[in-house]
Image (cartoon, rainbow, N blue to C red; front, top):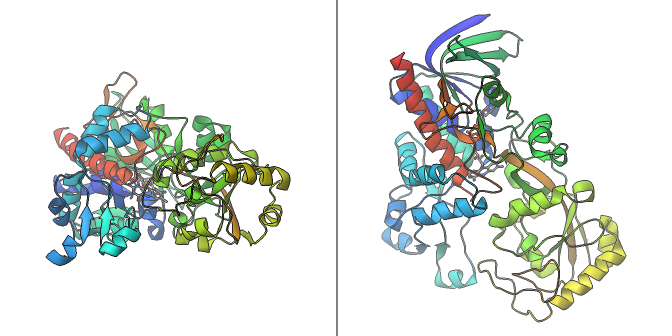
Length: 501
Ligand SMILES: Cc1cc2nc3c(=O)[nH]c(=O)nc-3n(C[C@H](O)[C@H](O)[C@H](O)COP(=O)(O)OP(=O)(O)OC[C@H]3O[C@@H](n4cnc5c(N)ncnc54)[C@H](O)[C@@H]3O)c2cc1C
């Protein structure tokens, strides 16, 4: 057994943990970072992201100040950025969570969003205008404009990989030790109940003891079939993962064993429709490309040929979790996205990567090849086409066009166009879990609380391991912001605690 004494031990190398390590280091603490994955796979789910970051601002010039590209005034004027208030940000998190997120936490982390990007920039992270979430429709093209309608305006350079690499480079420049291949599995707790450190097992099977204040930045439990079925329900057991395989909730369980309280949504997790050929355990380079979010441009049916959801309720980025969750309840947990040639033209380029899909000029034949019950399916198509025959405008992915079905259940309330123009396409999709919402209870100082809301001395948490922030869904770009904000706070307070004892 080997031992190591530090001020602060940070667990994980995702965005939250690395932010905590940077913050504790800046506060003068002697910090060590422990990571379960091999070095080449570091970075957690954060690494898999496009690093879309949601921030509130009152003047687009504020956004310009965050970017690393020098825009000429002319180039800048060709971009239209809608203001995005803090109030709107808070409401979007609350609405995505059906009003259930803890408002105090949400107001706090969203209020820090702009400032945390400035802080990350000071620590070497670079930012560009987002490619993701932008709207560039025919009208904009005619005006030569690129439009940003919400708070998703910036993106970490190089995506999630670029983000965590810059964070790690900052720590390396400060000679902070980062140890890989170490699975942390237990807390070291004194007789008084304060946390003194952590036990971690290496690939050699040897357990090492690390002493210091502990910051848990080790993600959710979404990669564990056992914990998903235990907390989320049996239908979440044998499904595909869009996340890294390392987030199995070991330290979440360890903290609970030592009296930590739980908070947040434990029967829901982030889940989306993905390519049916996706591996059960996500590959680092493919996870972000497996999403199949073209459902608004066609219809989705189950194996029996029935529609089961309003595919056009709102923007796909706001409804994809509802769709992913609905797939869990279907026979064989598979759905089929059906497009005609107009709908297919609106789908993201990722669709071209999918190996299993069916195409043909006879829709019934295509359905048979895909394994859908043809009679029921053709009846669905007939009813659907009849219910939207009055809609004639072409698809415009840039606007909620209000072209809806009449007298159909479930309805389609935007982009309801008949499926009539061959060739027809059928894409099988399955549910893919992204990250869990429920986690440990913590306060705004990122101390982990017990079930009486009393802080457990020496134990801090940040990012996805802490719950209460997101329920049901989250507005894209707010996960990384939550991680960095809670990480910075946890690192600062762990450093102060370590100095005080
Ligand atoms: C495909 C995909 C795309 C996404 N896109 C976006 C986006 O564009 N914008 C956005 O805001 N959010 C996005 N998200 C959500 C985002 O990834 C999370 O909100 C955020 O990354 C969570 O950060 P974290 O640091 O808490 O966890 P993670 O980044 O998952 O880091 C957890 C770390 O802990 C390590 N670890 C786990 N257990 C142990 C253990 N026992 N011992 C030691 N180490 C351990 C893991 O290996 C990992 O390094 C996306 C998620 C996925 C999966």
